[in-house]
Length: 223
Image (cartoon, rainbow, N blue to C red; front, side, top):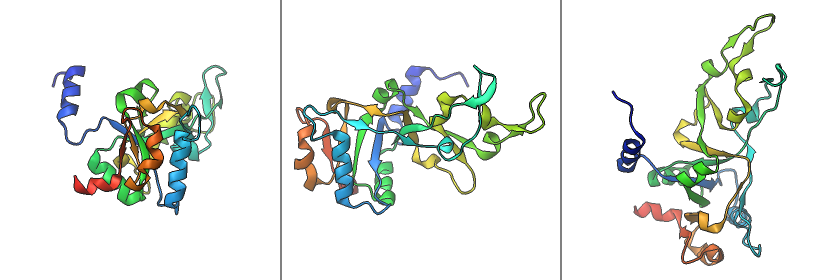
């Protein structure tokens, strides 16, 4: 089969019901966060009290490198003293049906969504879901006694995106993208703010000419 061109790939994505051009960050409430807690978190993200506001999504430790502490090869020193880079902001590339599933499983009512192409310009990249047998494959370097693993040699630029797949963890269904580091943005760069309809008046101050759109995830039951 010949290689697909960028134009054909975009058209295929546009016509595919399982493809989304939204990247959504939801505030999960399956960890006992109350609605008031989630509402406050979204208010802080949007910096509603700022004049002018400076919205910010703060990065957190993510992925496999966020839970492990491996020695990382540093090509500059030729030693295993490289930095671990795992801070990122997480998003899902879910369709509306996928967002409904996230809403139900994670009890999510609040969040924000951006255009995928916009976040791509800000460094967003799909997660690299690597099976354990590949990520932890070992070998012995010349002159060394003890074996090294593939994860010791993955460049720090890729650390924020690496997930491991094994019997007890497989997050490929989340269709996850990440932006390394904190993500500062302006209100007009948002497409959607997700919140219950009862909170529209609270979040309406973020809008200019009715954008971003305020959307209640409960409405997905009507789609």
